[in-house]
Image (cartoon, rainbow, N blue to C red; front, side):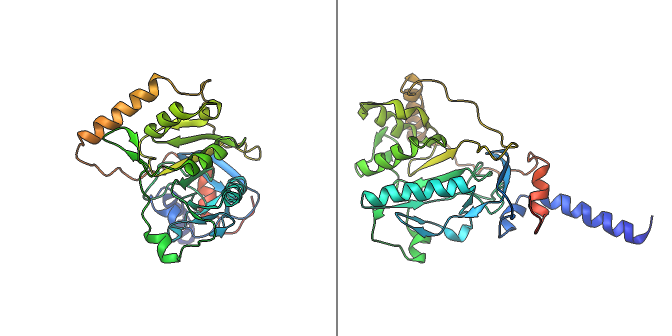
Length: 283
């Protein structure tokens, strides 16, 4: 075996290894060009052809832009822009948290999902439509909780505007499901007359200061792995009460916090290696 061939094989091995490094995906600063393709699942996937959400648009503003997690499938970007336009019509400006990294994949902190360009976090708290935060404010402004964990009730600062934004998102046909704190879900179950739209609103740990929107696999992405379909009904059943009891108990008797391990790249589809390593090729 020639020295040249040995060198080539060594470089290839480094290339493959970097695709499995936990921080390799966050080191890539730009999307892979070409038609959009979602590959894999929400918690083990990547995306080619992602686009950036403009940091400020009609009725919305991106928060924590220094993370470089404001990329997604074009359908996700259009969804956020439309949701912002609806908020602007109501006199508000939405604060948008993380979408995904330029090529998706696991982030070193903050999420186990948000890997395939189909997830976005929307803060509950909003700004007046005509107010644009400074860059420093977008990095430092707190994301306040909308629940009283130990009581299992909504925070008094909860506003009908937050419910309206959540409902607008849930009524969007491309949305697969939305994650909120179970206390918020239970409060909506108790207050809504027409609860059909609550089917997509699912309880999950955390999610007390923002709601997490997840789009369904788009038609252009045959390698996208969907979640199981939601069960029928509005989800306002005993399961929600059980979630709330667990949250209250955990808040009243907290256990020592163990920082979770960052998500691994080991479960990514093989095609994601190509997405990560290819600098310029079209899909």
